[in-house]
Length: 257
Length: 257
Image 1: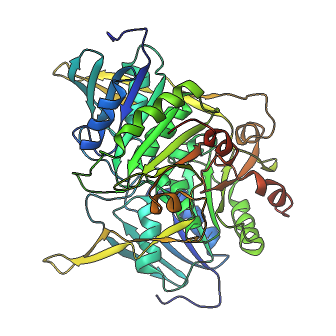
Image 2: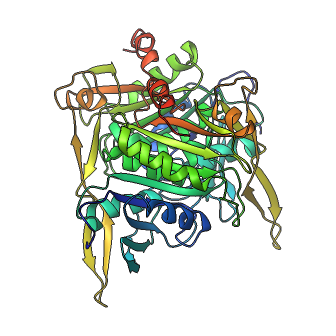
Image 3: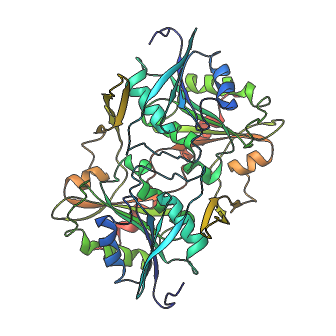
């Protein structure tokens, strides 16, 4: 890789595909901070979570190289992109992994389905400060103008301050004007009425994933859903250790043998 | 659904596909505990994490119905299977969701890539006690004989004792004789050397996911990796709230605006 050694190196990916508007905005902002390598899926990979491509091989190709920026498209998932970048593309450890800007919120339980956050967890697992950026607007033409000035500041501060091991950031922005930033927790809730049933010309049913998010704690004022609904950017420190430590002792007391 | 109302209802899925040996063993054992509905992928979906099928619709079909057992194959991911079951198939809330028996360990960081555990997190999100069962053997013909007697006991005790909200169980078994059960935490570690490079007849490179797990705390005696290596079944209480609570205060102190 022909990247300068004296600037931070930033690895960018997303799950909406390398041609999405959001990753373009994010790349523009990260170039103000350092040298950038983009390794992103060649088309949309929404809802891919931490999925890996196991059953067939993947490929990548360079599609652009300019001053401080190299872009690769990849046939894999967002997590594959980070793995490929770390194993086969970068020649030094990135200072930051960022994913997004996702077209659609990854607040609340969406964090576990999100390909954007899958890539961020992968960066985190590699010991690199990692941030997922998303906006609460699924439109391909989502307006990032209000969010855009915050990207550099959050990324710069994350590099400067560092993150605890195994902790990354899930950053979500509201639509429209932004009142500020709240550091909050993942809201409890779930999706309901999740399928739209259709019938094909042969009379056989098929099902499209859809649904409604049900907030299980609409009154709480320390959650990402609350922050977004109030017009704030939400930052949820997010971790890759899923252990429910508080449950170990009681389960160890079960009579299992 | 024509299932008896007086026995526990158990929903089973996996990520190795409905014809895998592991799900057959698990189904046999769960039928001793209650009525069983199997909704599992029609073929292998390893490494699918919490992936959702977003870009195209999914289908399911009944492939068997006998006393206390109905089996459906589904074109979606393990998480899709649980969502479809909950939204379109069951007529009452299952008492337990179990996934597996996965051919291959889901200990340590594998939990975030695992389709088996993706399904378990989905069951958990639906407020149902949920357990993922895996064995540390990727072979299609893995020997489940030592593990099999523990399945009923762990499942029965989980139903009887219940689990805290948003907590599920990640259960992994060693190969061969089993010394007992340890309730432990997710071991820290990561995969390295993750791709095997090949060249196609046209001279273009492609990459297969592979790699080696690097245990970052081989001396620790309270992790799932340690338990498995010592010949114990590991149970890690696992949660769907990924918030790093301990990091909120310090990040809230950053000068971000």
